[in-house]
Length: 80
Image (cartoon, rainbow, N blue to C red; front, side, top):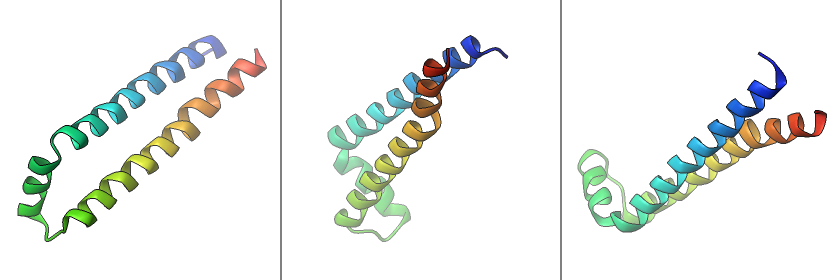
């Protein structure tokens, strides 16, 4: 795989991952109560814990996307 193909793949991965992050945030914002009720059936969790888990998950996911997709993409852009 050459550098141009790798850059293209990383850019697509970046777009897809940010799309997933946006869908997660929109679903969390618009369907918060129904999502909480669904998860409260399975786990004993308070609303505050549910919010913390989701925001922490979004933060970790975003950091992963930045480190594993954006940073290599920018490095390959600088090289070529």
